[in-house]
Image 1 (tube, helix red, strand yellow):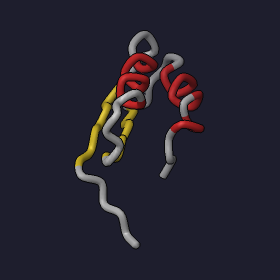
Image 2 (image 1 turned 135 degrees about the vertical axis):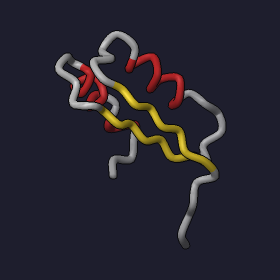
Image 3 (image 1 turned 45 degrees about the vertical axis):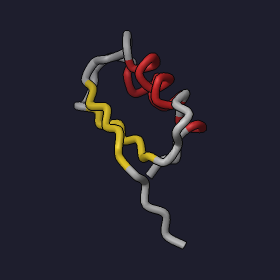
Image 4 (image 1 turned 90 degrees about the horizontal axis):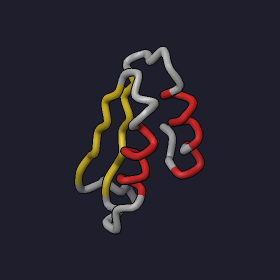
Amino acid sequence: MNHNPLFSIVTVCYNSEKTIARTIESVLTQEFKDYEYIIVDGNSKDKTLDIIRKYEPNLKVA
């Protein structure tokens, strides 16, 4: 059975180490779960990607 999410949430970020964790946690704590979550990083030079990687166990990585 193919499951299509009802909508997409997209976070576009660049050097967002100060805010990306709060953004991801906000999405993950939503009660409604029929969505896909896409994070697009613009080749950050700070610790943004390290922070995103910490959340990988909570995200289905495609």
